[in-house]
Length: 98
Image 1 (cartoon, helix red, strand yellow):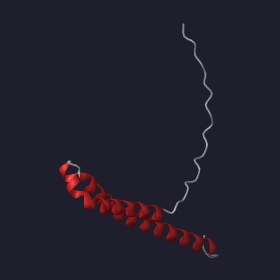
Image 2 (tube, helix red, strand yellow):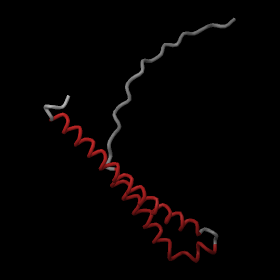
Image 3 (cartoon, rainbow, N blue to C red):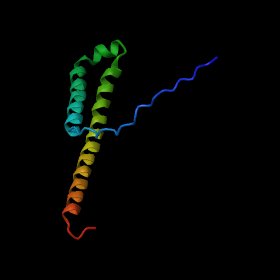
Image 4 (cartoon, rainbow, N blue to C red):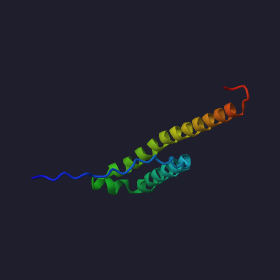
C-alpha cells in the first residue's frame, strides 16, 4: 500500500540582477599576485629543481600570462558595456526614436 503525498511547490521567483564588480581591478590584482609569486620563487629554482617541483614556478608564470589575457578580456567587456549604456541613453533621449 503506497501513500501518495502532494508536495506544494514553492513559487518561482525572478533571479536577482547580477552584481557588478570592478572586474578590471580584480583581474589586475590577481595577475600581479601570480607574477609576484613567479619572481619570488625564481631564487629558489635550484631547490625546486632538486625536489622535482619546478612546475610550481612555471604554474605561476602561466597564471600571470593567463591573467594578461583575462585583463584584455575584462577591459573589452567593460568598454562594450559602457558603449551599450551610452547607446541606450542616446536612444532614450532621442525624441524621434520610436
